[in-house]
Image 1: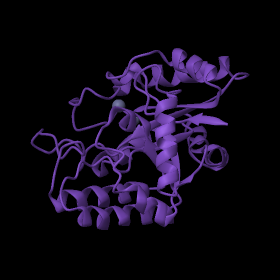
Image 2 (image 1 turned 180 degrees about the vertical axis):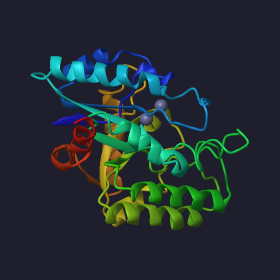
Image 3 (image 1 turned 90 degrees about the vertical axis):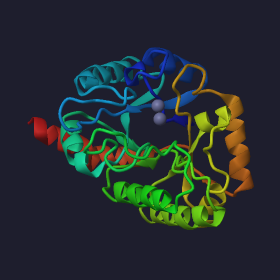
Length: 277
Ligand SMILES: [Zn+2]
Ligand SMILES: [Zn+2]
């Protein structure tokens, strides 16, 4: 079974290709599961949505309705899941989860692109994980914040856990990232090898991280992180990830179906159903 859970839509303002085209690409490529995990909106203070890389709260109905309609329409061809990619911002996370509980989400990916609450009190952006740093404090902050996010229990998979662009001492990187891999393992949350980063030669996947995941025995899943057509079924990217998995003895799992099935019987969907009734 080919399954892909990390895929975007144009609502996030930096992806192209319609959800329907993604579905048809996945079917043509022989996938039996396709999950949409677009960038969540976030409720910051006031009406200020500064990043321009997320859907707005008022667009959530469109997102959910679009994916659920495709899920129904293509039910005999492919299993479609409704998800989101979410940062953990402590100040705003509770309000976001309350908002999301009205929808029948099936899974959430943690994707920690920024630290703190993304936006500081003075309106400036807090540390972005994409920004190069050799500062151990930023690395430790990243790891601590991811762990705190994973510990909320809301996340089913950890997207690009190695997205932080640390250019300092490798021993420091390994020390902190080992904490992250170990806690993910204890919490039984799979780690994603990000195929977009791999095929584009980005700073992630970070090859100093994956030997640690191999040693600790984390479950690992491939994530297309598709922001354009052609990425879900990118065989070259998949082959590179398979080579990584072999080299670092990674424990690759093919899908998240058991987790999603378990959740629908007692998790968010019930919470959502209760809040509606
Ligand atoms: Zn994106
Ligand atoms: Zn993504």
